[in-house]
Amino acid sequence: MGAGHAHALYVHEHSAVHRLAPEAKLAAALSFIAAVAVTPREAVWAFGLYALVLALVLAAARVPPRFLFLRLLGILPFVAFAFLIPFVATGDRVEVLGIEVSGEGLWGAWNILAKATLGAATSIGLAATTEVPKLIEGLGALKVPAVLVSIAAFMIRYLELIAEELGRMRMAMAARGYDPHWLGQVKPIAAAAGAMFVRSYERGERVHSAMLARGYSGVMPVLRPAGAGWFDWLLAMTLPLTGVVIAAVALVVT
Amino acid sequence: MSHPVSVADLHFAYPDGRQALSGVTFSVGKGERLAVLGPNGAGKTTLALHLNGLLRAARGTIRIGDLEVTDDNLVEIRRRVGLVFQDPDDQLFMPTVAEDVAFGPANLGLEGDELEGRVDEALAAVEATNLRQRVPHHLSGGEKRRASLATVLAMDPGVLVFDEPASGLDPAGRRELMETLVGLPVTQVLITHDLPLALELCPRSVILDEGRVSADGPTAGLLGDDELLARHRLEMPYRLDGRKSGR
Image (tube, rainbow over all chains, first blue to last red; front, side, top):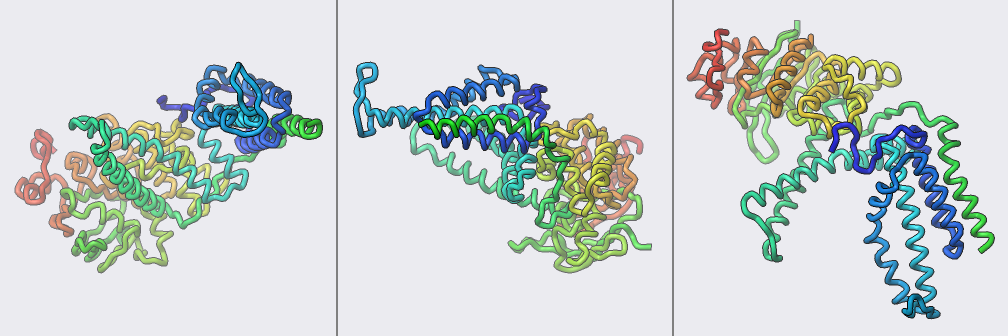
């Protein structure tokens, strides 16, 4: 991983979307997803419009289509069961490609697939244009409780460290000929997980000591750079506003 | 005049009963750079945690300037004594270096331009201005070390306490760190088993072993006493011996 930019989810570009204040982007992404979620599944045209609008934003942010596609594959395990619904659901049967399936089930599958894909694509767009520290900053600016913001920040800060530690531990095990093939051999893995837990706990204590040493008194100090201007909000909100209009029309006509 | 740091008859035992310090006494003069040497398990880190009030003495006293370390003046003690931890990953926990450097002074109540000023000064003092917006996890060992030093300098301490300052650094990083330390106009306590580092940076050393100060004197003299070193499981690397290098 490069030294400069932190995350595999981030696309290093200098677009207008990248420059928007993180809190405006977070709020915009969340409200857009909400608009998508309340849209009736029968309004197929609305989902097409959502996809179009989102594609325009992602193009403006210069998020490569291939990047988006590869990241979207991540939702596959979650939508996999959506494909089962037409076969197991009850109700009127319809024939698709020579197979008889439930019509109600087909709509159910479509509903999950369309909304999950749009929701994931929106989140990918947000993560691709906003660095992790900025996202944390945005959560704070949106008045998410400070404890939750701190927990998220700590988790992100130490997750990679713990993953690296786990990797080293696995390598050390492999170096001594550990090559598990059957269930009876999992004991060392359980022991390693236990050791990881203790190490992380101890690190937590050391980090807490280091914080106390610098005058921490139980409340994270507020370090807030200049907030989002009205222009940021206006620009960011064009996405969810468009979404809300589409959702409203879809609700009325369906 | 009171010493920046004076420790008298300090005793401490961990909750599991292990006696870590059993009567430590020493003091550090203003602007002095003192090395606290000792083998693993001598109580060095335990001592470091006491100097900043993170651990509380079971018996004995610690004074920082005219102030005794007690519950009532912990905030001021922690402002006066900057503690640089052995593992920078324990020290750097905020999403960016700049936020981490701002953490201490913000806890002291600084904000706005004053806080920004402190962050800028501290980063400049360790030549880390370019690390400002970097994510701590992705810094090199030497950069992490400089960043953690900046987080402490930002609190404007009169005393700096380092726990194994050079551990994990490559020779160039170690050289840079030493140059940085020499350039800092504050009283410094270096807790280490790195004897060449002590010899180069600290005119005076104390040897801590089994929770007691067993020697206190000019570093070159202590490190020239092979028998003393051997008794306390300390060794000069070959050819770096104080006498042989002509210091």
